[in-house]
Image (tube, rainbow, N blue to C red; front, side):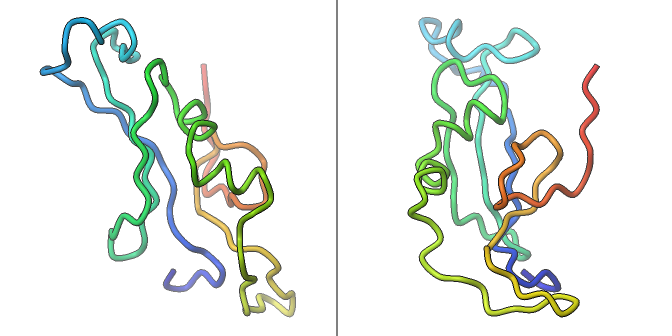
Length: 121
């Protein structure tokens, strides 16, 4: 990532209302607006190249449900990722782990650097 040593992408989830969703799937893919919604997890780089996409499983109404079902993040939780370490130093401190930029909703894992706080009411 340009200007962020050790950063391997931006992670976020998005939802799209699906007008063409089959009626039998409506209950499983209902979003916050109570309409059929597909959820997508994406990891993109500075050039908006998306190198990881994961469509949420039925019933995944938020980012965390998709995260826990993601094959990429299952490998992180199992300790089989990353296969190498970054070779960068920031302010005299050597990086020991690659990371993703995320918003405040993601768990406190060392692979996530939160760029903002998310306020929930």
